[in-house]
Image (tube, chains in turn red, purple):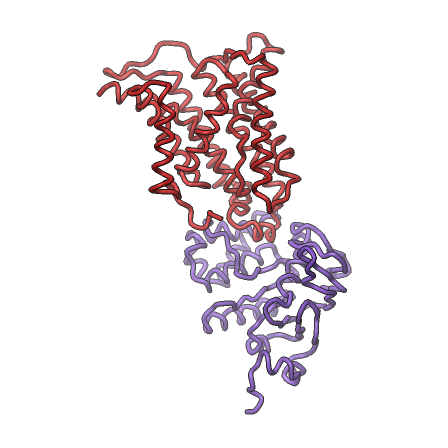
Length: 292
Length: 238
């Protein structure tokens, strides 16, 4: 019983990284009605790029590495917007699907070539003792990952619901023609959305690196799949949905990892997705009118 | 105020506007009549910058705005109340109005205008915090008009504001159109409801199959046989 509780707690804490990745997918879908398949790979690439700090500053503290990861990931997000979306006709969603799948493969190849395919160690967020709560053990690093992701999500929600930029972003997502009639420029909002989600992805990538301890090119594909699963379970375009679904998938996979081992765990996550597609295809938080 | 000359707008190979020429006089209400598919909405979108004309010239007070991006057209003082209202459904009434003032930076002025909108449309005040998607059709139309006014336009384009609304609501919309005009806004209105339009507009155009086929005063509209048959029924007998 205590094992189950422990698994759920660890899973929920780590699940915030999935939630953040899911938000990235869902926000781009909400604004552009297109899927950016390269998002999770770009997030991992962002985490990698944070390691560049060590070239200039050999003893850089972890926080500087994380911040660099986030900032460079924002830049990568903008580059992906330019390369995969900006000049591709709006009316062909398949075209951007293909261009971003291509980008996903390209990003992975670049990482493999630059690192010779070897995992690189990534600074830990905390390496002291865990906190004991009765029989429950709280991993402080996971707790910090949880807090960082929570803050990142809070900042995003603040931007979306309390600022002029947020009004523009939501306006474009809900009614692009009317948004233009208000004087909002679509290309500008789209570009900013990619920078915002890119940064968010960089934070998630950094936190994943920090809690796993290494970065490997093998991280990006499973993270892509998990991000998409979180997006579908949460409901395409729904941010609260992505948050809840991220925590749910995190807990779910950790429980099955405990019961069935790490080799089988992803199979059960797929089954969870299957169950949702059959019984609740709109996801947890279906948005009225957001489907096309 | 607005001059449209030989404007051609096409969707692929199909020309929806085949050389439209008309003008809107400052301080007046000009009404554009025409059947479905005549190109009225295409014309509105071409003026507002959503669609790019293939040929021709659109000028606002001698300042050319042809092919400009929508935000530049708004900046130039034109606002469009689009067909089917197009409110932001998941945003509150207040947020919709804030979006309408997107290009303005004068916070105090925006706040004052928002209060003015709430005085003009008391129903919106009651529903200030409510999501626009939950409003009735008439309320959404008011919101769409108010949102357009938040940019402080000199020229207000309105694309079928009475579409699908109950007669009482239609009357209210037209009362507002007259009020806005009296307060100094030039209005260019697309309307199918010719009876209502005759009560308020100063000049009429009829568009058919991408061309302007009639231009005249309300008096001339009542005389014109085409418009009689298509828009006013056979009321002239009585």
